[in-house]
Length: 209
Image 1 (cartoon, rainbow, N blue to C red):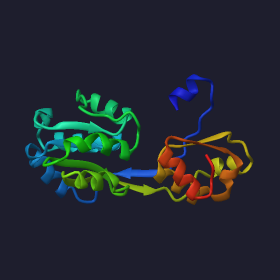
Image 2: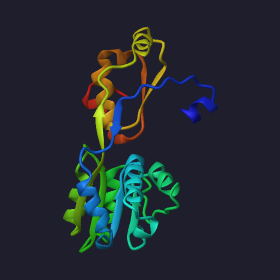
Image 3: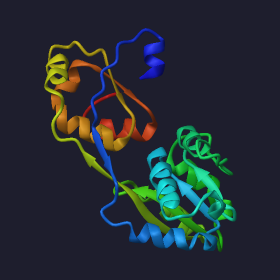
Image 4: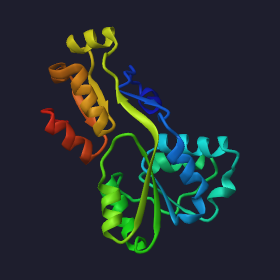
């Protein structure tokens, strides 16, 4: 939003995903208590960083608890979120997708313990690839991700009237949620997709980015 408005655009925000704390923190807390057993801590979103680190701090620990573990992030946004807590990543792929992260982690995988920080839903490719490469993978859900069911009525009307020039689609989950909310009304605008995976999801739903 900031970058678009800096260039003169008018932006309207429509949440497509609702993010909230997990229903049960017990598996996360157990992983935090066992941090020294892991070789790699892997983050696939900035939300994951925020929820995990805040839970770590709430538990009475601080950043020293991460002193023995290496950090991997799926992309620059996730790395920037870690940097807010003065944490520097050891590995970030040049391409912002799980397959690229898996490829770069695979040479380090054999016999190593990985803790994957994830949402309540998402693809399993990272865990599967690391396991195939000989790694031992633990996954913990640090936040719930649910679709927003109903759009803002004024925004829906503007979209119906072809007043929205572009809709940004920043994940596969958001792509599916937008299609569920707006359906064929998305034909009245242009879709800007963040990545090949998101583009593929849009095409599966019948919309060309």
